[in-house]
Image (cartoon, rainbow, N blue to C red; front, top):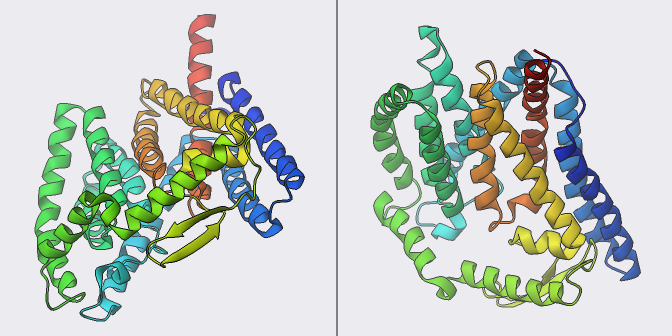
Length: 362
């Protein structure tokens, strides 16, 4: 794979995105927004752009692309181990909402799975085939015991997409590997769940999380997000085109804390970008993701890039779709990963352009 200039359909939204950041900063000063909140918002964009440009600058061949994806998978393994260790260290009988540690980035596990499965089925050496069952068992145990509903949904959507893109023979291989991992999941997960509480089984704990989602506003966590979103919507309607600038803080009642809370973070990423960077920023961000995914789907027709392009689609799409409603797209902890996923895809874009040019020249 040879480096080529960035295609216009990605360069144009990226330029608009950069201009929207500048606009958001200018509007922030005009509105006298909090400098502390402003710098926190800028940090999110800097992390995203740095990861995007660094990944695209580093990847000049499929070997480097493979190396970076291996780093993602190994990082996910460490996150899975961290989640299991956390479960073992909590006090028995602790309330479920206290057991969950949002500082552990379990969202990386479905991302790693999106890359791991297509690469695994494309390997021709049998000595590489042993890795998927134990890795999937580790990821499943950690995802289940994170008790994070958005991560459950992200994993389910990502797995469905992977199976959709694979051939029938490859699907059978993946299902066999999953069957091999299930005994370990069934054995280990309930044992670790007992470390959380002596009074409830794993099934009861999972049911508690599912039922809390169905409770809607009666669930304090969901009620807080709804009230936060309502306040953010009213703020956006004050200036729907240019927004209110980066560093804008939203004040809303938090049922969990029982008081009014003011902050720059929003769980709704759509409203976050519409408020902070205006409609140009929101539209350009959607354009960047859509162009990247579309190019990766096209690059799947190239045998040398097909596993990587498939992995990018299956890792990024669920992360973005689920993350919109969890604030992951505007979270400082995840913006580097998002920039990284877009940046490594530029190699596929360049290869796709080079292939198309070669066909025209022929």
